[in-house]
Image (cartoon, rainbow, N blue to C red; front, side, top):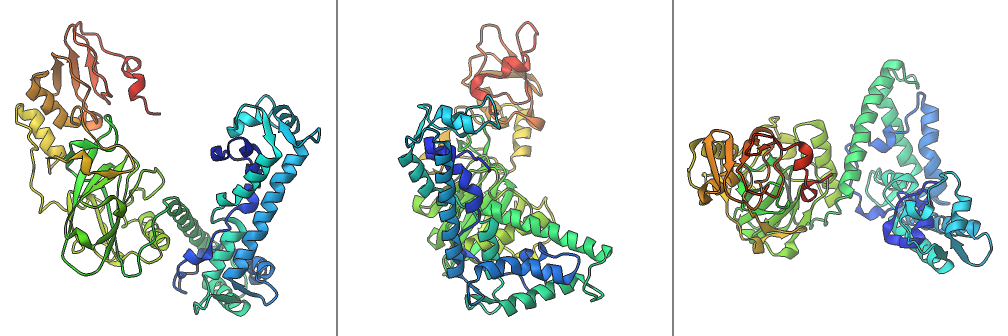
Amino acid sequence: MVRRHQPSLKKASAIVSLAGVALAGLADASAQTPPPPPSVPPSVLIESIRDYREAYLAQVFSVFRIYSGPDQILTAEDIERARNIAAAAARANVMQEFFAADLNDDGRVTHEELAAVNRKRPGVSPFEVVGAHDDGVITLEEANAAARAGPAQAGDYGVGGMLIRLLDLDPNKDGKLTADELEAQARAAFALYDKDGDGTLSATEMRALATARTAGMRERAAEAQMASCSLPPAGAADTILHVRSYEAGALSDVTVAGQDGVTETSELNIEAGDTPLYIVASSYTAMIWRVTGHVERVSRIVVSSPAGAGAVGLPKEKVTSIRSPGCLRYQSAAVASGSQQLAALGKALGKPVDAIIDAYTLPKAMIPSDGVAPRDLKPGRKAALRSTVAFSAGGLENVDAATYRSFMRFNPSGLIRIDPADVVSNGKAQRYDVLPQEAGLLQLLMSGSLQTPRPGLYTIGKPIARFPAGLAGAHQVRFVLAEGVPRPAGNPGHSTLVRADGSVFTPEELRLPEVIKE
């Protein structure tokens, strides 16, 4: 059996995780959307294809015949029944495991009893492995509660996922999939790769199938990744726009990525119109999206970045903020993986994406006029929309020409001031103690805490709160710490820190606990 870590179940998680396999994938069929056009076989059909037609049809029908009921017509009710059967089996598995470990039949499983029946991992406490409490006892009541809670852990995989994907094949969308409908589509899918129509697939035909299967696997992976985002469904009247960028080209003076993370900011200017807008805005860098203009049109905005995301200009009930490495990762829609992500997004929202704005650098976008239909998106990963954005110094002065030039080069839209109280984010929005990158260097030069005898070299003559964030890669510089000045807090990135005597701080000396993020 597969064991998983389920910390929310506390003590009883030591045994409830054993039911994971039986529960996998039995999700509600109601959230599914229509299948791809017939000219592109859905992945559920491609995955089952064998080298000859009869074996393939038998494979396709094996799950259908078992779960479609006496009438051999698959419906949502059949899938719900399959869910209930699997949930009951999972509960039984949990309780069976409990009773198998209750060696003295006292209605309790102790640490020692569970260890005795779990000798496959000697020297490792099962309680420690699953994160259970350390009191060493799982009671019958706890096991029963955990068994009942287990079905909530189900995902869209396994038999349940297969049934949902089969029902998606329903050609007339009457909520039913008949055996004849399934057979017709399965035969058509096989024929697409059986070019000579002899009922078997040659080596050449199998290679073409392998390519299609790889694409299908990527499609499923994109759908699974999107499912982890838990996106609110779109309204029936909503126009869906996906705004996607790597960066903004404008720094924010407020961070949603912590004091050692760089937060940028982009403006989404909403144009006049009657159609409600559902906006999904994702970026690679931490981002605060400033929603301006006719904001009353926005029914919801989802902001996402693996480093942190927030929005201003909308009430918090209209904002969903997501910070997850696997959710809405930055990928240009002009490449295959980006296109699959876009299709998965539409499926997760319950309707296709209407328009997309895809730019590597995006300081501002006009919504919806800057959007293009996904099918019309042209390649160009480095595309940028900068024509309507003026540079803003954000109060910084040109106290050093080289530093100011770098500030303008890396941030063509400059520095934008934001009130942290206006930011809606699932993380903490706070003002920077020291601005990031070259903006922070200018700030410290203006205060007199830094001096720069030559480009790229900065002497820390007075105590400073912390290093500017983001001094890595092309932003790295060399600091000299004057005699008697304490080492600043924060993360210097790839920058070098030299003592007054010329000795260099080692990487270990620079790795303070507060800045280590591994």
